[in-house]
Amino acid sequence: METSVKTEITVEAMVKAPVEKVWTYWTEPTHITKWCQASEDWHVPYADNDVKTGGKFRTTMAAKDGSMSFDFDGIYTNVQKHKELAYDIADGRKVKITFTSQGNETKVTEIFEAEGTNPIEMQRGGWQAILDNFKRYTELH
Image (tube, rainbow, N blue to C red; front, top):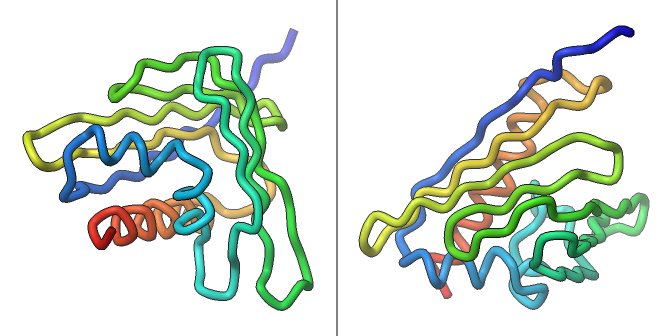
């Protein structure tokens, strides 16, 4: 039996907000639709999130010009409020997000398994851009 080792990519950001606010803004669909895009020419017209172990989520990401869209969805494998979210993406890749409270700041660290189509640096850049949008949105609102 052949086993393949998945490449893991890590992105992180220090968000100037307490972990309770960071968790809320990360998990509530009304907030997800405001920050979950990698560039200004994309948006999130729909998000649904059942934040519990075994719960499902779906985020529709779409080009603002209507030329392309896709659903990013999966199932949570571990939810520890204000601490960790782990999930399997629909394509089978695993993701783990940790929220580390540091007083009035929260370190958000995402570790995800790379897909085999796009270069690693492109994947890291896209996920980091989304995380940077989250940081900006959370700190401004």
